[in-house]
Length: 488
Image 1 (cartoon, helix red, strand yellow):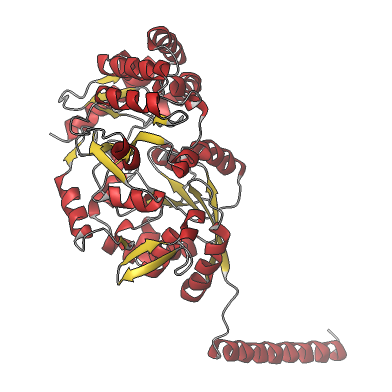
Image 2: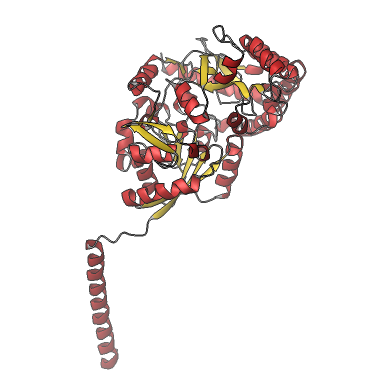
């Protein structure tokens, strides 16, 4: 190398070193003045009827999370009946997202964890999610493991699942309906008849395409026609369509459909939100929690009462009934877990996401109690789907011991027969896909009573068997037997 070139290189190196030194000093100065880095945007997909004020609320949420964790939030809501299908398409196509709602009944948690849609979060929980671990009942995190790993954060809510018939109290009072003997599906008949005869244009039994009748079975996979009967110590897996309990229930549903008690469009109806907003319904099926009537009444803007329709049992699907997962394709998994940690431990954030903007959508009526304002109609969120329910403000009609009653309710639940069992479908994936296609053809129309079960159960059963249902049931039985042996 010539001396001139060598000198030039040496000078260049010195200048570069000086430049880096100055740059480093500048960086320290920026850090010392507290200038924040550019916040990341977390893209969140969740379930529920899209609300008019979501973007308005998320703007306020983002101001808060930007300050707390250096992240903003973009929430995308997908309606109840469309959520599973749209999420399957988006995750398969690689649509950018960081957080997503998943559960046992919508965008199936176990199946999608095994497909690789979600990031395993064991380490993230230890590092960025310590508040979640400290807050959640251990049954939630233990009960939601898939093949030994956590892939989602369960909502801290009621553990048992108890089905109830929920009633529009305005109509109950107007017609002096007696709810004392309400329990079974059949017990509803005289009430439905009264509404049909006296309230034209009102849904007596409000049912949409997601409806599943109340039958005493624990499903292997939610909404798939194979289950174990509650109380069966042998844990025999059966085709639920071939059981007398399901046949009787579907016959009653079809009877109600023909009588005009059920919406004619039930099998294709994606949501009941519109009819609930108008109050033109008598009863529907819901899942109970302590003081749920107050919550529903507050949300709908008119009084609601309920009656128990099943025992309180702890199922896999109730433990996994509401979860938030981090996408396997998330660009910011650590930040996503920081957000979930905040969502499940910070009352300010949790209530903003649940109830909207204080003074706009609701007002405080005590340290931990609130009531909705008229603008709440533009931001009515499904509380159970959005994280730690026990951080939400009480309704003004709820007692001060509400959360103590939740804990008692959780302690009172009995274990369903398959609690802790997760079916591994890897040996029958082809058959499951085929059965799923058959289910899409028959399930909603059968469950809503739209079609005659005497005619369509045999048709559906034949197609299910041709698709490989018996092979899936045999595989499920083998796995259930092996699991049962480990529990002795």
